[in-house]
Structures are given as structure tokens and as C-alpha cells.
Length: 114
Length: 113
Image: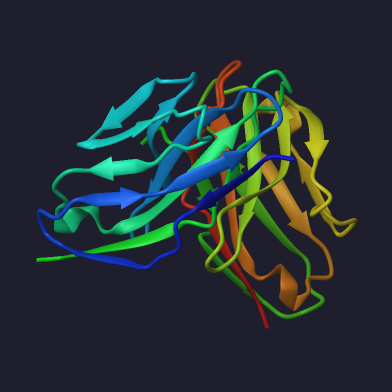
């Protein structure tokens, strides 16, 4: 089956620190990979995505590279801000099944301190 | 605001009661998904619609759960004879065409006492 494993939290950082959240996946087929973010009191928002090997998704200073050889899609940001405090979810979808449903990891809570 | 909306945002009910949630997707989005999220976990797929047709249901969706999407616009999710284990955040998402890029609503938080 399809599954996503991501780094357990919580993660607490100081402003301007480097953030990495590890994500690995298991999938039947060739998945598309996503990072969603959930800010306090808000719904899930798509942060970035990648649909094929070696693609790099990027948005708001965050980046993640689709690594087929290691089945990974780690999220990174070089200098975090307090406003990046949120829960981050790695997710995948396997095209070709025609449903495009998402399978999510458990989420990683990130807190950035001023 | 043209995003996905859900109503109500919070629902507290007693065990054994029936509840119904509504989701209004982004206009013209043909696919609509329901997910359930429990504390400390990621969302889990429940069911999805393409237009008005319900095409897949997860085994998480017991017989007490039913979902509809009449006319391919808004959707409702009903839970009959609620149990404490049904307490969760129920998320709705919509998408357009053949893509996994889904837009999520704010969710309905259900508490069963």
C-alpha cells in the first residue's frame, strides 16, 4: 500500500535557524509528492509539490526535492521565521488510479521562537 | 472568498445522535474529497466524488456514515448514531480535473460526549 513516514516532532527552533523535516514514502507506482502546511486555526494549505524524480518544489523559501532512489521528499528552509510556526504534512498521491486521493504522514509540529 | 467552505466549524453532540456536515467546494471543481483527522495524525481518506458520483469509499467509512453530492455541487456527510470514536476533524477538499492538487476547507470539528 501507500504510506508516508515523516520526522516526529515537535521541533523547536530559533528564528533564522535552518529547518529540515524528513519524509520518506512507500508507494505502488510513481507518486506525486506534496507538502501541506496547517497554520494555527486554519485549514491545510498546499505548500509545494513535485511530480517526478529530481523535481524540486519550492515556495515561500521552502524547498523539497523528489528523490526516487531514496524514496524521500525532505522539506528544508534556510532561515525560518516565527510565522513559519505550523504543522507540516508530507503527502503522496499515486496517479493512474484515477482517484488522486492523498495519503498523509502524521505531521510535524514546528515552533519558531523569536 | 471563493475557497472551500465547511459548516458548521464545530459540533458537539451526544453519543447516539445523528449529525450532518456540509461542504461547499470551489466553484466548478468536479472532484470533492472527505478526510478525517484525529489528534496528532494526518488526514485519512474517507470518500470522494467526481461530479455527483461517489466513486470510492474507504473501509474507515462504516455503515453509519453516508455522503452525498447532489447535482455535483455541495456535499453532505452524515454520521448516524454517533460514537465517541467519531470525535475528529472532518475535512473537505476539492480539485479540478486530473490532478492531486487539492484545496482544503477549514474543517468541522466533531466532539461526541
